Image (cartoon, rainbow, N blue to C red):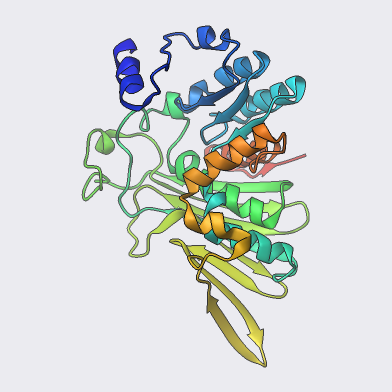
Length: 323
């Protein structure tokens, strides 16, 4: 492990980059103000909680944690310490998402009462690292890629109060490694779900349908970070990075494809930088200027709660009810 860390420091680090084999030694360094947690999901909570209590701000990779209980520990630690905590949901930083958020906040959709969120791969099971290890990761496409789409959907709806979740996971593909974009390397023996679907009802009556897969016999794959929102005045969809709004005008149905590459003043940075670059810039801005990060831990915690509820519902065959 030290050899890998030293190579990474040499290849990507600054001349004064330090290498640690125990993260607690890193936390003891008072010169370090911010920690990024990029480990397998199982390790997110312990490292984040320790980092926050050591006085560091933390950005943690998605999902927030392997379990909702771990995510709650992270949220509690952020509140107790007053340190900033954010989660790496960079799809919020896409120009389509930035435009959609402003469009919705201006009242264009009216009341959003239904949504679909998608993260559907035809053959795209990750087969490196610990992606196929349930103990380390906690699940398959639900926790890996649907987490992005669900986060974006809740964010655009501005609705974080789930009432009921009914979910079903599927492990049906006989040869998911066939035509897999990254080859086999364990895909054929993976025990994790290859697809799943869920129905989510919010406390205000709004509903969400979720669909996700690593491997599914579909001719219409939809990238993570995709969703469709349906409002009383209009609707919109973000699918495969294409943003389309729809409404009725002069008794005619009108669809508009939004050119988010045009670079208007309000979201110029979003149109001129990659989402991960925008994510990094906004995180630095939040720390330096002492503002809230784009992704709040309270929001990410709800995402983790719903994801876990899908797994629980599928296992028990019963809906999960939120208090």
